[in-house]
Length: 309
Ligand code: DON
Image (cartoon, rainbow, N blue to C red; front, side, top):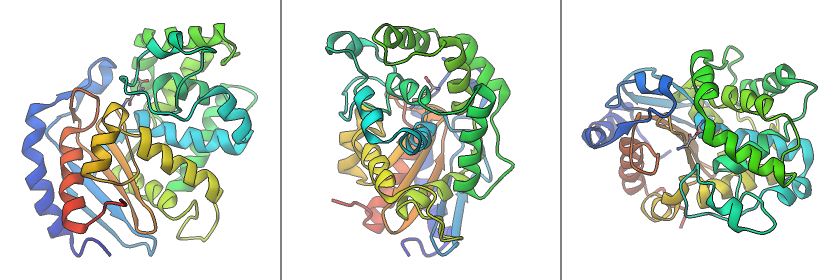
């Protein structure tokens, strides 16, 4: 076990926390700007059910881009690898998460990976169900299974705030509709995607989801295979190559674990064969990753030799 006590983790949180002052809470989705950027919270969850939480209590965060890993797993389970990767690529971009540039320059137009907004919107459009309600309920049901918590849902204020303001995401959708990567009504897709990004939970639930990926898709408490091992492997690989956007290379060198960030300040980590990590620290760096969260992972990686490489 990498961490021996909550107080050990508490010390690392105290060391990482001050850097949050240099970051900025996301405000392009207005409802996200209400949180205190200097709070920092972390949970570790191990396959034997043991967990440690440290920092500022049970903070609740919305998943934002962390949800992209979950919908990717579900879309691969719904449609299969060939269908998914005919429409969305497998390469990092080196561009910001919401960039439209490569959609225009790559021919035929196709988002480069499922972790950037364009790719994630295409992935969400692949989630099966007869209407928007059934589709969000399927995503929620999957998250209930991954966390073992059936009460989790989305924050309607955050979902509404994103739906009302995300004109750039609409532009990505219309671009992809032109090239038939997306075929559905853009407003319906935007509503589903905004709700998916606004699903909220605490760091412990985030760590539990990470633990399922760390454990090759198996729920450690029931032994059930919630995600086929091969799909869990694909998701973890995308977390390494694209999970921290255009900071993924530096993150791989400094931390060296599969991780996915969200613009809410959340990070989900999955240390293969070891444990899941959930972090929340809302002040972001200029690339949209939690500043204190990444710092904390760097400190943890050094102390516990977490790097896979
Ligand atoms: O689509 C968006 O812009 C947000 N709902 C999610 C983006 C995000 O979390 C990027 N992460 N760092």
